[in-house]
Each structure stands twice: as structure tokens, then as C-alpha cells.
Length: 469
Image 1 (cartoon, rainbow, N blue to C red):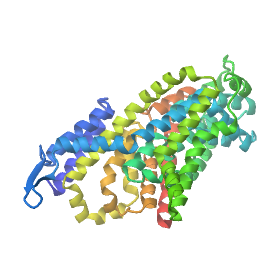
Image 2 (image 1 turned 180 degrees about the vertical axis):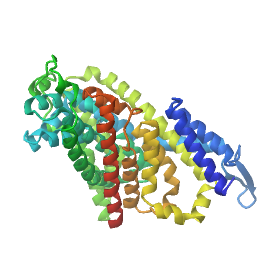
Image 3 (image 1 turned 135 degrees about the horizontal axis):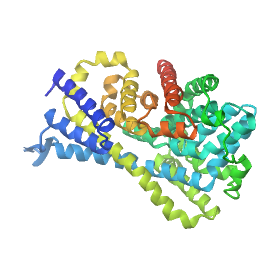
């Protein structure tokens, strides 16, 4: 199959995948793998490898992979390129959460911003914490601090809830070592340029942080949460009491080390490459600056932090819990790669190349729209990011994105789409509304509308950057 019928088959496949995940509640891994298999058959990929015997080399040469090997190649590529990076990044986040280092980082942000700007403080706090910690758990961790700040400052509870949700969400979709952006970077071929992705993630955070803060302040005047309408009997812990529950928190340097050291190592590696330094020392620095090794070093600092906090007895359990957490992400990522591999082995890429003018006209908005459709349909930002990355990976040259900076901007566009929008099929929507003591209809006016505005604002910033770079 080729031409328009193949494009129609692809669109039908995407719609079917969305319905399977969102309406029939089929697990994303099974839905994506199943759709990939059906699409492979419909697209005319051979059932078995097509081979011929080369008389010149006296060897059998594979002309075209069959469906089993296409699926195998797509699946294994995810684990070989980004699997370890995702696991190490998630483990570092778990340690920061367990030892109280995440709380220490929040403390540092409060001291930096000051209590006169509690909305900005809680937003930036969430933004920092969600770099290593999933936004769902990050909200749960920081919600007691949010309540304490509301009690202490008298600022709207709804405003503080929205600001915290906003900050957590932005870094969740933009900034490695959060698994989604790492997975997208690896899938799109800029996994070795994570420092570039991190830098652009920081830059692309500015617009949505501003929009989220402004909208949160606006809605705080319009909506009252349950804890503002009735006096709660719940004892709200002070910031000091929350810190005391951890005993002695790690120092600021120890809390930063698992995150800062990998960033520094990747930065040094980039400088070595940029100045074209050669020799044994340069090779060693380049080795340490690869994402896997940099995060491995960060993991060592995290383990040291765990032992200094006298929590070594929980080391095995923590690793086990981390693997359970990242397992579904890895498998969904691999399934997305399989779908991308099926697309690349079909005739679709050749057809798109022959008609590239249309896609090039859409440009950077194509990955954004695709991710936004997937996000809105099935709820998970991580699934939307990894699936879109798998689909877009083979189309990058056609879309006109070839340099590392351009591809990193595609990662950002996918992230922006993956925050558009959070509603009832998103677990984060319920975390925010429930812990923020809001009704679902209030959640649509706050969380859902805010993520729409943030996604659009992010895409505006990304489009401007694409014009510059």
C-alpha cells in the first residue's frame, strides 16, 4: 500500500489507538503494539525477511525486514538508547524524595524568592522539584507546604494550587532527567545532547510560567476551594514541622549534587567537543559526559546521600520501587518506537518526501498538534511524548529538522503538546483537584484551561526560537 490510502490507514490507526486507550481502557503498551502490528500488515510490510544471495560476496543479503524483525528492531532500540538513562533519572528522583532533599531544594527556592511572593515561590518550587520527581508525587509532597503558605500569607488557596500545579507540569514535560523528555531526546537522536535539551527546556519554561502565574492569580479571585469556604479541622503543619519529620535534612550542596553533577559533566563534555580537545583526558571527560555515565555519577551521589541519611536499609526497596515505576514508561516508549519503525519501513516516508511541501508548511507545529491530540485523548503526558517522538523520528528530515538545535526544538514542541490539556482522563488532574479541595467543574476552569493556555504559550515561545535558530 502507498500514497493516499496509506496515509488514510495511518490516520485510522492513530484514531483506533486513541479509542483503545481512552475509551476501551486498553493499556497503552498493548494498544500501541497491536495497532503497530495491524498497520504493518495493512502497509504491506512482508511477513518474513526478504533476502537474496549476493554472488559477489557469497553472502545472503537482507533486502527488507519482515514484520517480526521490524517489531524487534523498534522495541530493542528503545532499551539500548534510553532505557538506562530513564532508570537512573527516576532513581535519583526517588532518593531526593525519600531523604528529604526535595524538601531542602524547596526550602532553598523559598529563601531565594522570599515569602512576599508566595505564588511565585510555590510555582518555582514545583518547577525545580519536578525535574527529578514526577509531577503527581511532587504535588503530594509539596501540598502541605502549599497549605502552610496559604495559612501563613492569606493568599488564595486556588491560586497557590494552580501555581504549584503549573510549575510541576512545565518541567515534567520539558526538562530532563524527567523520563518523557529524556525518552523523546533519545528517540529523536539528540540523546547525547541532553545539556542542549535541558537548556532549551529552561528557556521554553519562561512563557508558560508567566502565563500560569497570571491566570492563577486571576482565577483565585473567581473561585473558592472547599478549605476556603469552610474552616477545616485539619491541623496544618508549619514548614518547620514538615522539615522536622525528616530529622536533619541534607545540606543544600548534598541535595543539589545528584542533579548538578550530571549537568556539569555533560556541560564539560560539550565544551571538550566544541573546542575539539583531544587526548586521554579529553576522552575521559567525554566518556563521563555521556548521559548514561553522567547520570550514573549522579546516582552515586544519590546513593551516598541515602547512606548519609542512614536509610541504607531501604536501599533495595527503593530500587525495586523505582524499577516498578519506570517499567511501564520503558515499555510504552519501546512500543512507540515499534510504531515509528513500522512507519519507517512502510512506503509512507517516501510518499511524504514526495509531498513534503505540505508538512514543511506546518513545520514545528506538526509534532505539537500530534502530541496535543494524543495527550487530550489518553491523558498521560509521558505516553503522548514517547508515542509522538516514535512517530516523528523518521519524519525529521522531511520536516526540515536536521541540526541538534532544531531537533531539540522538536522535543520541546512535543513537550508543549503533551501538556495540552489535562482533564478527567489525566491522573494529575485528579491529584490537583482533590488535594486542592476543588470540585471537578472547578478543575476544568482551573487546571484544564490553565494547561491549554500554557501549551499555547509554550508553542508561541518555541516558534519564536525556531525562527531565531
